[in-house]
Amino acid sequence: MITLIMFIVLSSNPIINHLLAPAYAVSTIKVGDQLNITSKLVSPATNFTLGFFTIPETNNTYLGIWYTIDDYTKVWVANPSTPINTSSSVLMIDPDTAKLIISTERTTLVNISDNESGPSFNLTATLQDTGDFQLKNETDNRIIWRSFDYPTNVLLPGMKLGLDRRTGRSWNLTSWLSDVIPGVGAFTMSWEPTGDDSQRFTIQRRGQPYWRIGDSNNQR
Ligand SMILES: *[C@@H]1O[C@H](CO)[C@@H](O)[C@H](O)[C@H]1NC(C)=O
Ligand SMILES: *[C@@H]1O[C@H](CO)[C@@H](O)[C@H](O)[C@H]1NC(C)=O
Ligand SMILES: *[C@@H]1O[C@H](CO)[C@@H](O)[C@H](O)[C@H]1NC(C)=O
Ligand SMILES: *[C@@H]1O[C@H](CO)[C@@H](O)[C@H](O)[C@H]1NC(C)=O
Ligand SMILES: *[C@@H]1O[C@H](CO)[C@@H](O)[C@H](O)[C@H]1NC(C)=O
Ligand SMILES: *[C@@H]1O[C@H](CO)[C@@H](O)[C@H](O)[C@H]1NC(C)=O
Ligand SMILES: *[C@@H]1O[C@H](CO)[C@@H](O)[C@H](O)[C@H]1NC(C)=O
Ligand SMILES: *[C@@H]1O[C@H](CO)[C@@H](O)[C@H](O)[C@H]1NC(C)=O
Ligand SMILES: *[C@@H]1O[C@H](CO)[C@@H](O)[C@H](O)[C@H]1NC(C)=O
Image (tube, rainbow, N blue to C red):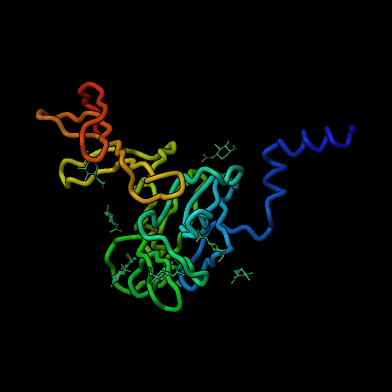
């Protein structure tokens, strides 16, 4: 009994938890690495895990990020509208296009990142402890792409929603279609420009206003 209590106390200590994390856990892939359907990336302090998951009701497979201690809540999905169904799918960095892709046998199934660029061999993709998945050019140390810029239905600390008035680019949350279909659902949460120089927070249902709060000068 005493042993059991001591074990519980020890294992709720984050430092011990970290030491108990699987020795093979990695948080980064580089060009040439492939993350297959059963492998995972785990962020350095083990806060988040990235990997493929299959929804039993549909047999559709998605790449996602979840809390390591709670795999039920997916905080991000790479391919909500383009599920994959082949068990030979892998996540990799395509050196020819410098994109993060899901591919099978040399065929690109999903382009996850969107920046157009030429061949590049010195790239890494790392799952951060914030839950942000970042594609980085190691040569000039620039982040080329990050999952935080492509929110799905969960806002994590450090993510921003908003609207860049200059480029027209927006960062919204969008509900899943149903509990078992991550594809674009009915509800969108966004900042909507108003006549003057401000934006207001709004929830739309199928493109129609559903809920708004008062005008706000909050800018991204
Ligand atoms: C996936 O990758 C891991 C680690 O590289 C390997 O041990 C495992 O056999 C692979 N699984 C499949 C289904 O290819
Ligand atoms: C999912 O795949 C399994 C095994 O191939 C099959 O038995 C099951 O009927 C499939 N379920 C659906 C919803 O397609
Ligand atoms: C897998 O997806 C492809 C293309 O989306 C489709 O043609 C094929 O029928 C699917 N296979 C299964 C087993 O569902
Ligand atoms: C992925 O992007 C490349 C260009 O970088 C394009 O040629 C290819 O058709 C795209 N594939 C898919 C599945 O969208
Ligand atoms: C990771 O988890 C630890 C323990 O829960 C927490 O203290 C820390 O703030 C988290 N790190 C980030 C970047 O969220
Ligand atoms: C990648 O970039 C880093 C930082 O500039 C450099 O130290 C390293 O040698 C580069 N690796 C390759 C394979 O070019
Ligand atoms: C990476 O950085 C180097 C040096 O600035 C640049 O030549 C190369 O095009 C960059 N690659 C990508 C994919 O951005
Ligand atoms: C990649 O594209 C995004 C916009 O989609 C842009 O904000 C970012 O600066 C680009 N990154 C690079 C390295 O060009
Ligand atoms: C965000 O929502 C607004 C509606 O408020 C819409 O016009 C915009 O296209 C959405 N942006 C994205 C990236 O989904």
